Image 1 (tube, rainbow, N blue to C red):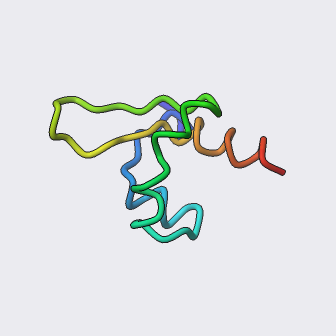
Image 2 (image 1 turned 90 degrees about the vertical axis):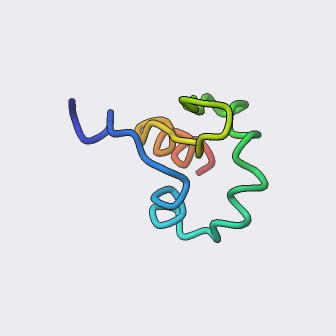
Image 3 (image 1 turned 180 degrees about the horizontal axis):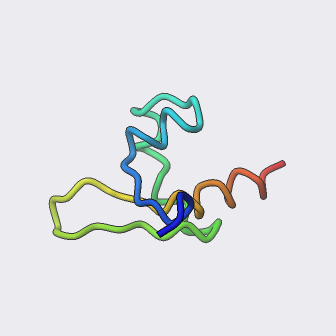
Amino acid sequence: MSEDDEIITLEEVAKLTKFNKGYLKQIYNSWRDYGVRILKMAPNAKPRFYKKDIIRMLEAKK
C-alpha cells in the first residue's frame, strides 16, 4: 500500500487542503462529481476518502 492509497478522514483532508472542517462537511458530497470515492463502513460512520482521489481532485481544479 503506497502513501497515495492511504485512507484519510475528513479532519485529515482539512489539514491537507487548509479548508475549514465545518465547510468541508457541507460540501464533501459534491466531490463525487470530481471522482472522489466516499467510503462509509456503516450508516453513522464518519466519511473516509482515498488520499489519491483528493489529490487528483485538487490537481484538476488548477
